[in-house]
Length: 236
Image (cartoon, helix red, strand yellow):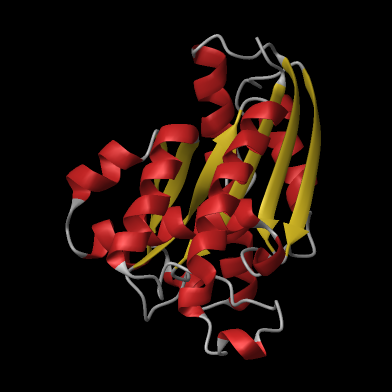
């Protein structure tokens, strides 16, 4: 049994009236060794591919290779990374249907930010619940969430770290804070890190994963979306 969880998260799509869906999700690991083994394998593939996506000629290489993102990678290379993610990590996603959101959320920038953070903490809760139900963790855990720095914007009422703690340990679970539920943990430490994806290969892997999930959603391949996502949540 491990009491450590490492989550890496990125986004695909935005909460707004111009897009049908926004997805937040990525990969997670139950131990540091598992995380480091995946990172080494992912880095090995990226090192092999990166020159194929660089506009500089080899003789002019400045070692500042572009980040390989889902929206730029060739299908055959995408399959290699996707297969690695399937085989060596656990996956999660929250799928937000924008057309089902209240107009008061869609039309207000602050409300969109709050709902974004609410969605993130809800999917984190589902990951922890999955691990508890599987008997992989105890009721006291150490959780580290690393998230692409563009994927969330905490508002003035709370920050994401405090909100996750409230959700899991105190039992607050409502967008408007009107309802409380039974907590699922006795105690926890929670760290939230905002990362630049170009410097973090595990965030880059999260980008590949959520990009795939959004593609499956938009092309009505729900069977693939479901089979490739271990823990998922649909909102609202």
